[in-house]
Image 1 (cartoon, rainbow, N blue to C red):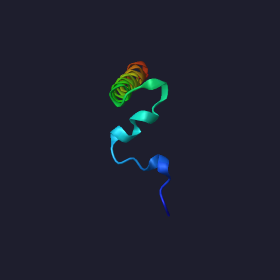
Image 2: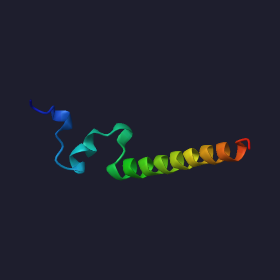
Image 3: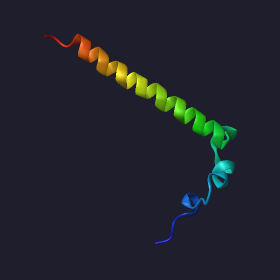
Image 4: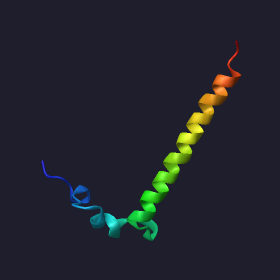
Length: 56
């Protein structure tokens, strides 16, 4: 079964022209890492607060 052309990038540079809002690959990677870092911290905070507030 042939792969659709949208998924057939050979390198990250091939996708650079198709990004939204004129972002570059560098910007996309940077903001993805920032998002993952913040969401990981929020996840840890929720677990710590739940542990602290646990009765007993």
